Length: 271
Ligand SMILES: NC(=O)c1ccc[n+]([C@@H]2O[C@H](COP(=O)([O-])OP(=O)(O)OC[C@H]3O[C@@H](n4cnc5c(N)ncnc54)[C@H](OP(=O)(O)O)[C@@H]3O)[C@@H](O)[C@H]2O)c1
Image (cartoon, rainbow, N blue to C red):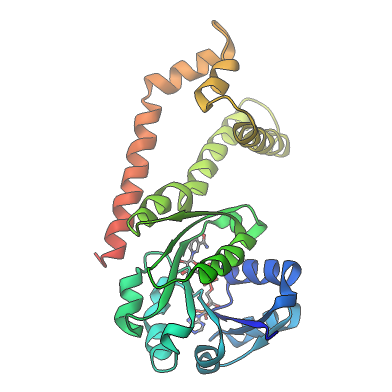
């Protein structure tokens, strides 16, 4: 059986996470090609993983799956270069470029492409990512399964049936790690202000965040139930939660996510 060829355009952080997962987990059935304008970066990837450096043209002509893993500001040039060489209906194109819509890709490369647009997040770099995926209507069942298995190397996948939902995913899980980092940062700051040293503050707050997320994922209780369980009347947690509530915490989180969503919609419209 011929090996499935996966070609990466751009070998930055996100691509490396995928390459790491693909070369350790499912490499037998696949061959990996890659290109990058940063020659040193491409050499690093080729030295450290079982990846063959190729030109963009060779990848466009020969790969079964082409992964667009460059920054959004570089995508136009990549699409222009790809347009002349891709085999249209025979290949699957997977884009992880934030804010680049399938219609934008089609505008450059034609409307007969099988396209999957993804929105990963930074925990992908350690295999704990959450990726939103949208497939256009030309993606076959096999191609969808292939995209699913490639993106699973970054963590969990969440497929949506409407591309607009990618903007929601951007506001929730795409930008989401930074919301949690902000909360962790604030808790670490007050922890040191109250007298714990930096290392101890980091250790306690990080473990608490991780433990709370694990508990949220494994318990049958809904999230409000979990919170109520640790909130005894007249206790310390209740005192803190009252302060959060009087400061409009949930309303603030809502407004922040709405701002991220609006920005995502506008970026996609090039505003
Ligand atoms: N990091 C995240 O949290 C995150 C989350 C969701 C989505 N994404 C998306 O994932 C994509 C990749 O992100 P990243 O952080 O991995 O980016 P990155 O580290 O900047 O990697 C992109 C690589 O592509 C190279 N490149 C630029 N133009 C090229 C071209 N014309 N042909 C070939 N290679 C080219 C870059 O070289 P130079 O450095 O020399 O330009 C760089 O080595 C982005 O579109 C981003 O929006 C990232």
